[in-house]
Image 1: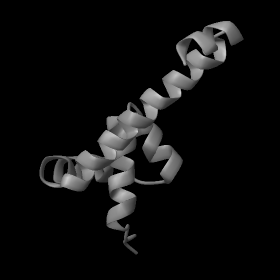
Image 2: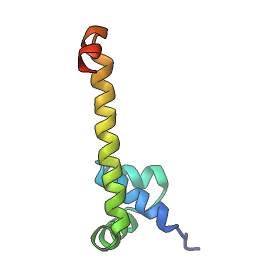
Image 3: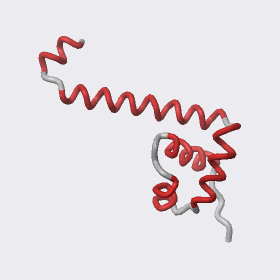
Length: 83
């Protein structure tokens, strides 16, 4: 029996792929055949604005995480000076 996946699920996997996760990782983690993921990447990445929006959000999230990591490494005096 063929599995059905929602558009949101497909776009989420594509966004994970664009954020650096490999198709192999995604395939194992979400139990989806690599060929299926490659097909979704081809279909949705080129023609779907939502994929672009997801990628943009993941890029922003990565920037925020980087900022938090830098802030965690700063001393209290450095933090106060930065604010």
